[in-house]
Length: 387
Ligand SMILES: Cc1cc2nc3c(=O)[nH]c(=O)nc-3n(C[C@H](O)[C@H](O)[C@H](O)COP(=O)(O)OP(=O)(O)OC[C@H]3O[C@@H](n4cnc5c(N)ncnc54)[C@H](O)[C@@H]3O)c2cc1C
Image (cartoon, rainbow, N blue to C red):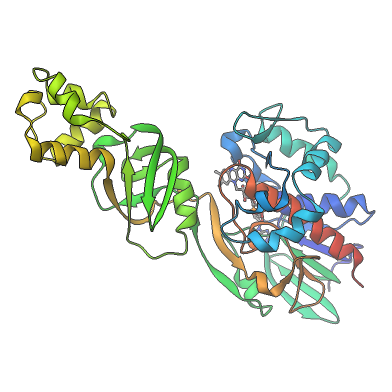
């Protein structure tokens, strides 16, 4: 016997996308049922290091969409309906005051993801949340049968907001194509042993990879590299095969010849630490087989070339994403099979998607949550409008 639920719409997944979608439906007087296997909005808590970077201060739709290596064009029409301004208004409406940091990222004034979570939960009061794991979704009787670990339910419409990591087979079973999930915005593992550099960070350096050049901040980890620059590279390279090479320019234009000549009686390790952190300088000299205690006058032309090469073209070999370092998933429901004006499936009528479950992912900076709020709005409008 199917339990009788008055709602006609089920939202599967109570993360940022699912909850925002429930809110937008509630605004229209429609109360969906949310199925959430975990605690509601738990995934919001670690965002922005606990501060919740909820949007980015770019109010131009095309420019905003350019921050999504997957989904850029699809988002044009989504953002034309709901973008940064609407996101800020949404938060204002539910009592979350926001501010923009110097780097353009928006946070709540409380600097607390837990506070944002509380406000969203308050705003969806009246929406039923079933703490159940959805095991299958099947079309039946012009609607959908949802089976959880506790019961089976019937709904006329289903909005899937299960995020990027889990249960994608639920969607495959409905006939959708899934772009294989791989990590994006992640630290990277290198074949070189860089463990002695773990914790060393460098600001605003240039990286070359796959014919592209990017600038940003770098952090060495116990098994590779991380930091904003690496997150962006991992996102751009998410669909490329490992291994690949990245070369860093740590020092820019350096007149090493002149510096060594002017400091001929100083040790080379002291001079190199004018350009890079001391431990990195030590690593470079060791890799170049140069004794750091040598006087600068002893460093011959060949050694100088080697040092310069390490300073300007420090090459690493990336072998994989670092375990567990993933912030978003690249991959998900193929965008060719979703109508960007309604978020409705082009394959199964009355089935909708929003959030990271779609093959959309952006850089760090609030873009991934922006995708959630925007696609949630369009899905809610779409589900409210159809049949
Ligand atoms: C550490 C970290 C920090 C981040 N910081 C930021 C940030 O500051 N700004 C930003 O823009 N983005 C950030 N992100 C990315 C952002 O958190 C995600 O893009 C966003 O959470 C995706 O929301 P979603 O609702 O689509 O999916 P999710 O947040 O993954 O939510 C999906 C929900 O569905 C539930 N679910 C899944 N399968 C089932 C099932 N079968 N039955 C029932 N329930 C199910 C899950 O339990 C989950 O609660 C961060 C991510 C991480 C990991």
